[in-house]
Image 1 (cartoon, rainbow, N blue to C red):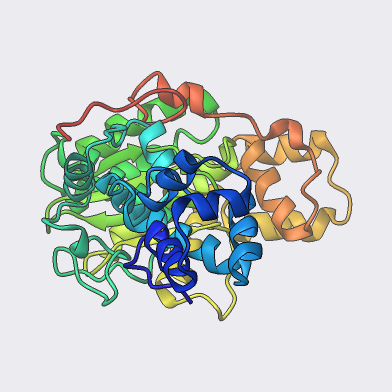
Image 2: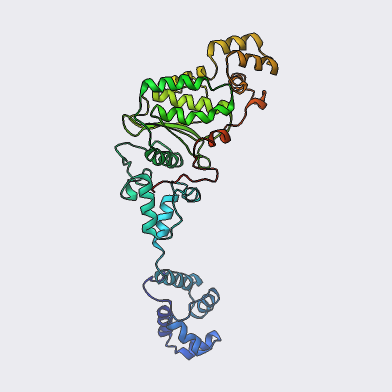
Length: 372
């Protein structure tokens, strides 16, 4: 094995000296000019694979001896890499940095220091070692351990947090919030009514934020508190359907009502009406409250038992009017109970455009302006 600190030219010169050869002798043996040999000995010309094979034949050494010598010398003398490479690679190993840049959360700065500073500012820390998931040891940010939250979901959460911090709303009032939920219950019959939700929540002191999820994160919503007087509800609108909107929103509202999410954020992925033992008590409570809000459970169960297995469109619409909700809310509940997600899909109308008329979104081509 060749010495990585010795140049390829020096190794060839040593082989020549062992044989007592001059540059002209080696040139004659290789069938090249003396000038070419001089360039190799002075490391002004690298040893190509073909030349390595020629030198192998001349000096009876393995071809790999010269190939390895040249490769190690080239690597040793290569220009130092851009410092931003290691920073980008370190962040990319955990976070969808390219998607975060594409979304406008972080600018595509090639300067490593500026890039690191942007990421640190995004997560509200001083160094990359303090960014969750980027340290070998689980560190805490703002006295909360985020290591159990997958990195793509955590990036989404911190974007919701940044937007929420810059919102101007009154202090949270639980009594007002209970009244707000009652007011929202009167909006369920018409999809256009969702535009009233941001104002109702804001008046009760709840910061309501909508941020499009990052690819593959499968996140539906989050509940956390900036402080005792500032609860935050974040939605991704991953499924643009009336049933999913009201279920997830009411699910997060339940967390706020019961004071969940104060110790650490509650990130809800793939929210469904699941009441299995796999869910913790907080999620079971939130699911129960959300299901009862969408369609009163007792009345839905009665309708279900009377009509199964057939649910004609006209009867579903009639039942929806009886309970004062949009047919899509009934259909969403029936689909989950039956496991038939093709049932009456025409009633699962979209809500995003209606909601966008009353608030700013972060995503779907728009970027919510923030100070960072």
